Image (spheres, helix red, strand yellow):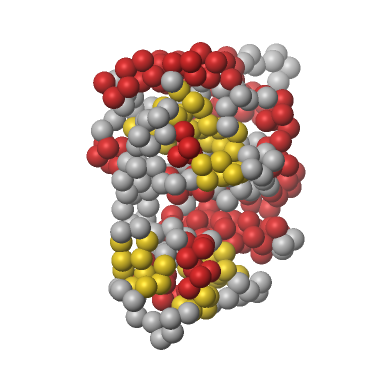
Length: 225
Length: 112
């Protein structure tokens, strides 16, 4: 997804590092990475280490300057207008399919504006209006109340239990994590992926149900460039 | 951060959390938090959890303990990127800090 932009901006001083937040690890991410053949570092984050920085959904971008200082905290990052924004609704679509496509098209994604801001930063560095001062980066980063910190501990237990083959216990802790950190889509979606095809009956909900109930702007908050 | 007992060695705590048990308390980088210990070699996770504000979740049916990140404040306490090391597909570790001197766009994605 990022190779084209990387080819354009790497000669100008930007490196892209992609990180797969996949509790199922390298085997789950491998097919995508091998197909993309990225020239940039492509890493695996089995334990959701990036959640500690405030990553709650994907794709999420974080800008880091030459000195290792974050100049934009986690925010939705698409390298272009995603094709799902323009997908046609087939004439023979069922009402359910139609509803899903309509929701996906309504997701608040502004890839063009994001990439324009990124290009501006690559060209102008700290002088770019999109490179935020450190206090603004901290201010914009997500609060971490005790509920969300506790959710991280339950998610870790869920992963460990899942790896031990204790699916039912794992599900209990994944549900706890989701309940305690209701704005984390990564905790929901990765747990659903682990549950597999039966996830809707195990978790009593679906992606579509959740996005419909909570609204598209809770899924991808509007960019505040 | 997963543990298999309620009481862990100071070495294991340091390995998993970066917090070291010193005479002045639990220390990481420049910061020390007062911590009273009965033994210099081992700590109760419940005490660590209270001292550092890191929530403890327990699964007694499988003998597992997990510490969450420090609660309170914001996800980013400062704008300095913490030291993050993650493996690539072949398990080779990569440190984001190895890219100092270059601008970096870190992108989280997932297969799901």
